[in-house]
Each structure stands twice: as structure tokens, then as C-alpha cells.
Image (cartoon, rainbow, N blue to C red; front, side, top):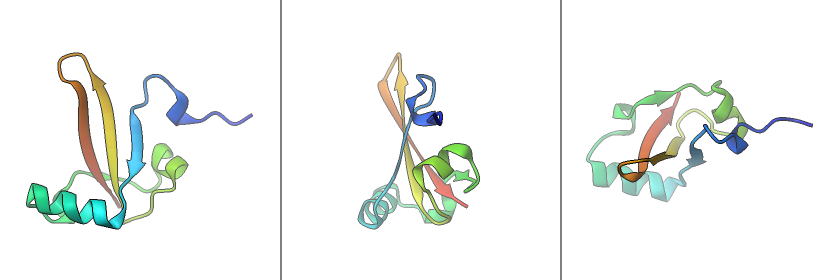
Length: 76
């Protein structure tokens, strides 16, 4: 049986944005893709979700104060 990182309670939800979602996000934030924080393609969670270089990953963390915090990473 293989352990899935996404099932661990301390690992926040990671999902790959579609091309349309990524374009919309970059337009809203007013930044270029290269200006986003980075995540390596060989990161275990990136491998698990199938993220490839150039993808933008949305990370949703639970927060005691905000309820939910969303972060974005560019896969390199």
C-alpha cells in the first residue's frame, strides 16, 4: 500500500490550475508567471499531483485566524 501525501492531516490541499485559471490569476495579481514563488518539479507533492515545469499550483491551507489561506507556486 502506497502512502499518499495529500491524505496526511498536516499537508495542505495542492491542485494544478488549468491554463485559463492560471491566465486569470496572473491578470488579477498583475504579475508574470516568473514572479510567483517557486516549487521544484521533484518536490514529492508536485510529483504526486503530476505537476510539470510551467504549471501553477494552488495551495489551500487551513488558518485559525483567516479560516483559509491560498498560496500559489510556479513549478520549475
